[in-house]
Image 1 (spheres, rainbow, N blue to C red):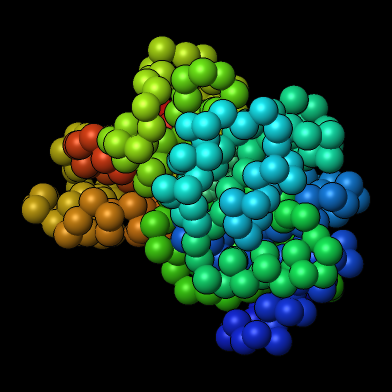
Image 2 (image 1 turned 90 degrees about the vertical axis):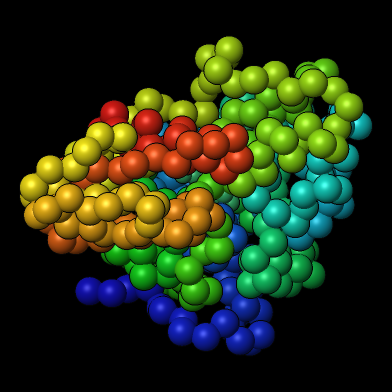
Length: 322
Ligand code: TXA
Ligand code: MG
């Protein structure tokens, strides 16, 4: 039975109601430009606990706190380096999460008992409106992981959210409908706790974009052992076995940029013309391969130094299976 309410249009009234439900301790799944998030009041321990239950996620994996503007930085974080403020000014609202030293109000139930806190201002208009209204009600931030079950592919539409977690939601929880996510992969996560920033998870805010605005050097992630849940070596995988960068054979499903041909008897799931379109459709295409019951999905990963780095990261992990 479908328990959560599906909201087909995001009217002002609907968003106001969603903000009130959040403030009352219920969960609201909402669109962002990266992927859909499963939100709870970041100050409400019981509500945040439910995120972990609904996702089936281990409680030592920290949550990102979403705020409506850069002013939220000082609410949740302290000892913020200048370069982090520069990054926030340059790329917020947008697909970037900053990891900073937490203030006491960022409790262990948000940070997985770490002394750091992740903060993001999303740019999706529905997300921003929800955040402003939630803050007008006295809320300080919305904790939200991607709205999928732990280890599964992130949702990029409200239908994906319903399919992933709808059966675990309660009557007062909501899923906001906001169309297909514009970017399609999760935010760039940058650790800003030391003199030089470190990319913990690549995304649409790329190394050249970061380098172009800050004076200090980025530490490159290949050189470090990183412990965030999206960095488990098996993540982002559909049911189908993902094989990357090989010629597909009969009976396999296939995702590649449009300039690649489809061999005989191979099922072409998608042929994006650009890398941005590739990212936007990737997770939906993986879900489609599963819906169609394919055992194997071959993906030709785009090469390049922009968002391609994020695609390579996700697809390498996806190819490690569940
Ligand atoms: O694009 C996104 O970031 C989406 C949308 C909804 O904002 N959210 C998202 O959340 O991808 P989640 O929880 O699925 O992935 C966030 C990652 C996790 O791997 C988590 O461990 C890491 O961020 N993270 C959060 N807070 C952290 C912290 N204080 N230190 C290190 N890693 C942190
Ligand atoms: Mg996630």
